[in-house]
Amino acid sequence: MDALQLRKQLIEYTAELFSEGFLDEQFTQLQQLQDETNPNFVVEVVSLFFQDSERLLNELAKSLSQQEIDFKKIDAYVHQLKGSSSSVGAHRVQRSCISFRDFCNAKNIEGCLECLQKVKQEYSLIKDKLETFFDLEQRLSATGGSPPLP
Image 1 (cartoon, one colour):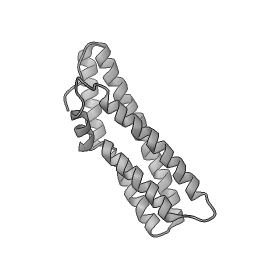
Image 2 (cartoon, rainbow, N blue to C red):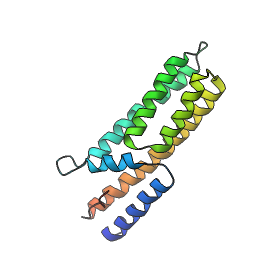
Image 3 (cartoon, one colour):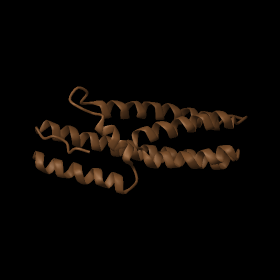
Image 4 (cartoon, helix red, strand yellow):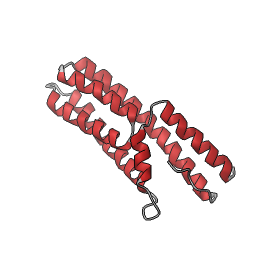
């Protein structure tokens, strides 16, 4: 595939991520911080988001499986996940965390367990989508093409 086709595919894919609510304007702002001095800035920030999210999701699952549920601790983990997803523009993960926090405040274990599954699902989706996005960018770069400006 040539650079022009890959560039077009990347533009269409990016538009789809925004129109389907996976990403919001924060991701665009993140992209605008990337320059020649730090060409991998977005990939590095998103990779940290992936690592942090997986740790938090594991902690949430562990905390929700305890005999005594510490809703304050769970809420703190969800708050962290909401903040990190917001900082990279992972809109649907962030929105899922808002509902999760409501169930934590209500001390509703069933609601929390359902929200954990929803957050895991949204996280998995955005991770796959962003990996595809970065793959398209890398393939475009390998052809000598430059990614579209945000």
